[in-house]
Length: 581
Image: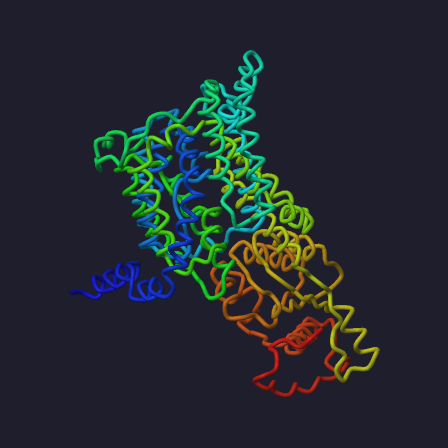
């Protein structure tokens, strides 16, 4: 086996379950089994609701929770992550269903799973840490708004209008309700949402969602509420796995949606795993392995008619709060839902759609952390702007565009903040052994500037303007030891400024150039301009002596006008290359 093949094999085996996972499962199985049962009770109405909202039906949501939930539990990178259908993914799937139909969604899910596995192989999980907090907060707020608006048709008891824009669909549903009100559906949705929200404050550990849904179902059956439309028939079991939905000719047109689904699955899953880490002590997820597990889950889910899945923040939080310690809890959650699919499908089929809409409305409301939003908005105006833009883009466009817009705006504002830290300050010349008159004479012809901070494309042109406006001097000394970074644009702008000053007869010298900066300056031809005759000045006093020699050589100063300064003592290894201003 070649070295490359060995590295690839090592990489693949590092993404597979190991002995540590089995040891974690054996640690406290009772707590994990109880936690998994609790999560399954919470997840049932959510899986049904998100399946209905996606357009593929409640059975698709259940299949996703069972198949994807179990595979992600085994192969994922977090011991506590719970995966399945989520509201964020539903937001992306609705327009895909409208454009490509149910088979298009299944194909997109399969392609997204392959992309996630590829991301895991490329070790892309670590880049999640670079997503700014305002983008995540705005993203979450936008998702909550979209999930809530998606439930309006079922909450109002009207047929879902045509369209893939949630604002348009919501408006049409309200218009239809105004012509033929269905107060029964509204009452059920509001009652379920109220019970969930009030119960969460009263007894946070009790799964009031399933209690409210059971109560609404019982009332609808006993009172014969025909206006409360039920879910409808569900199959008693999972369908046999098949690839009949796959159309090779459509893969090219579905690549864009697949990339969007994969990006969202990666973002939400890694975010959820990070939230789980923050709620515990000693738990840390493996981001690359998490992508690998989500990839396998999304490859398998479409084979059983399921929608794309991600890590679910709400269900993961319930899992942590109920005492889960290993991935056995997540696996138990999937197993319990499988039992329900096989044994209780007829009972589940009688649940009113309005009751599920109430569950998702309450879920959307609970997703909005008002205190966190206030804190984020008060940090800086830039953070508030990023948050609002991301949330609005999520609502008006889609989630992937929203994240891209948030990242671009955050990057631009960060560059602006870094650029503002760059400074060009005139500093006084060191007097040395000169008398006051001699020092004044040198200061009349020599000026020193200290470059402080980054010299790159976002800040360089300001230096050009400031440098080229210098007048009535013969020599400029640039102290560059404090330049933190430099790119090609900064070097080119500096070169341009030096050339303009040279054409005016002003000599430009530089001191304290770092090795990395020297390479950039040399690559654009600026280094030879800053080092006349090939001389390099490590410290400012050396550059000042060279400037004085230049003034004497050109006849501006006579040799006996200003006495020679003694050579500075050698700097100790611990001393800075550039003396303080």
